[in-house]
Image (cartoon, rainbow, N blue to C red; front, top):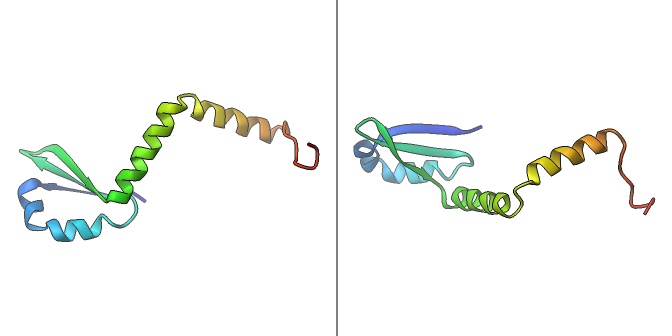
Amino acid sequence: MDTKTTLPISEARKKIFKIAEKVQRPATYYTLTEKGRPKIVVLSADEFESWQETLEVMRIFPRLEKDIKKAEKEYKKGYFRTLEDV
């Protein structure tokens, strides 16, 4: 479950240590606003690293999502070989 909280930067400044603690939970992040508009997002270093890895994989394998869906369809139709078959 994604947990998103939006706060003005001025309010976040007062709560930065609590925010830093809360974003350690998976899929938790804060959107900080300036004059009511989103300005930055605060998330844990682990979550950020995970996003970077995901984007890198998507860059390297742009067709990966299509290939996975195709493989899932073929598997459901029985188009696969077991290790014993090989």
